[in-house]
Amino acid sequence: MSLPPLVPPIKCQGIKTKLVVDIRQLIDGREFDRWVEPFCGSCVVPLNLQPPKALLCDSNLHIIRLYRDIQQHKFGAGDVRDFLRDEGAALSAKGEDHFYQVRERFNSTPNSLDFLFLNRSCFNGVMRFNKRGRFNVPFCRKPDRFAPAYITKIANQVSAISSVISQLDWEFRVSGFRETLSEAKAGDFVYADPPYAGRHVDYFNSWSEEDEETLGDRLSSLPCGFVLSTWHSNEFRTNQAIEKKWRGAPFRVFTKAHFYHVGSSEDLRHPMLEALITNFPAKHVAASQKPVQESFLMGDSLFDGLQPMVATS
Ligand SMILES: C[S@@+](CC[C@H](N)C(=O)[O-])C[C@H]1O[C@@H](n2cnc3c(N)ncnc32)[C@H](O)[C@@H]1O
Image 1 (cartoon, rainbow, N blue to C red):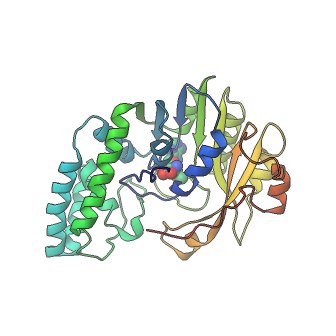
Image 2 (image 1 turned 180 degrees about the horizontal axis):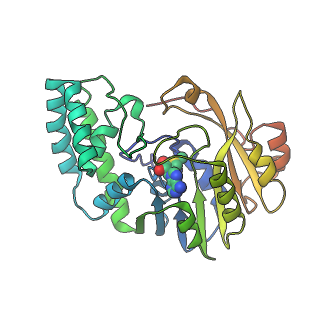
């Protein structure tokens, strides 16, 4: 029986909880010394794959601070419980004013517990920062957001990831993807999950054509294996970059329907065909399944039996 997936205590746009099983399948049988993730976000992928050694980077310093604080035991599940109970009580008593007070406090003196509070009580659980790097997501409008069961759930998530992180040799670092990838060496394995161009643009997620091209160039010349997550298509458009950049050996393109449920607009909630691109053949994808590019061109899924995902919160 497999263990239930580890759920990170923070939510972020483009979180890959639903792809962990597929990424695990793609890399099954591969050996590597170090897992390198230039866009680690919530860290849901490494938290579930649990590579013994990892370099986990993101340009969002608030995410990295949170994981470092947990790693260095600056706070634990008990502190989270106490903090959310007290702040949750103030939220119930004062309503949205309290949310905006915490948001102001965080924006003037950023710290991990306020970040957690905001992330778990803001509108739609999105993480968005304005041009000046200030968190600017409005309140979810539920003054009783921090009910005891919700606090326990978050405290348990912190406890679970804390015990994973403390047993492994992981480094969390604030870093742009260019610097992170320049460090990758033979024997590493890279999982890259960049922002999807034109989707969630904010202070930490602006993503230009040039970024996309540079990332493609850096990945294709890596001295080690990689998996790149990107979007393949939705009902409105198709990702032309896949055809342009990743067609032909040694690259493989795998697709899977995925349902977005973290987003501020209806557009972000449309079903999306996800692509996982590798620079190696996937050992455990059944031989009966079609070669990747054919599948890509025909737009069907290589992952036998996997269905479009349904939203959960
Ligand atoms: C799609 S999210 C990653 C989600 C993550 N895989 C997960 O499952 O939670 C993209 C991440 O890239 C980070 N990011 C955006 N631009 C970046 C850059 N130039 N260098 C490094 N990280 C960047 C964002 O802060 C965001 O956390």
